Amino acid sequence: MKVWTIANQKGGVGKTTSVATLAGLLAESGARVVTVDCDPHASLTSYFGYDPDALSASLYDVFEFDHLAEGRLPSNVILPTHHQNLSLIGSTIALATLDRKFSQRPGMGLVLTHLAKALEDDFDYMLMDCPPVLGVLLVNALAACRQLVVPVQTEFLALKGLERMMQTINMVTKAQKHTIEYIIVPTMFDRRTKASIATLRNMRDEFGLHLWNKVIPVDTKFRDASKANQSANFLFPDSRGVYAYRKLLEYLQSKQLSDKVA
Image 1 (cartoon, one colour):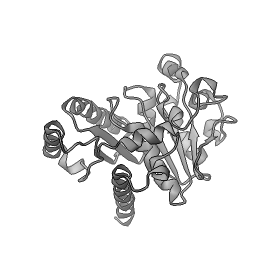
Image 2 (cartoon, one colour; image 1 turned 45 degrees about the vertical axis):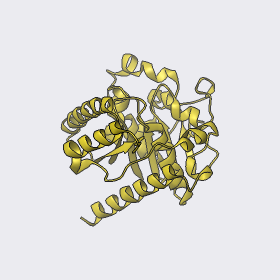
Image 3 (cartoon, helix red, strand yellow; image 1 turned 135 degrees about the vertical axis):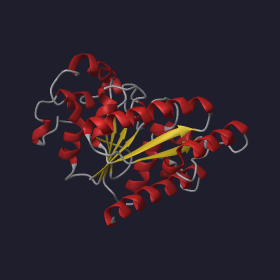
């Protein structure tokens, strides 16, 4: 199973949209996909039409579960979505208490790694939507993944969040002693504005080696898809935003193939 983490230490940059759309495209291709909402704000959970306060089981229960390392899961934790091949492990506000309650518990940094192991026979991909703050959830998601996608809105303030994210990647890499492959994805690009163009130029100058050479454009179809609780590719397959994510998915899959060959 391939494990992808979508993260940035700034909110509002397109993390949830990226998870939902990439997962939808993978499911459309026939892959079995599970998305994991690691954010206490539960945006991905709401995106797929679930009330975070009404879930019978969530990612919080996974962190509380004593038998995860044995390959077992809490009951009812995997939820269906509107789409075939696409499932969800939802979030609740209780996740915000993890650092206070469990940060000193042995093995807390490897919970999502154990989760991926427990799911590997049932899914081809696991995609994680992360909170924009450094804590046990983000560290877990970085430790578990083999591909990190960092969406960055093409506006100046977003670059500060990107700098913090780079520091976190370096910290986790040193602590875990394994390299995290990451790609920076410019999002919400509006070619009509000088700010978007200037920010993209700055990103290319500073992060060129890790920067995807295309952009995800501003597209109101993403908002319409979230209102319908569906991945945008199923509703608006020909929209420019979905087209851009198709190109991103092709890049990510070709990158993994080339890594295998190497």
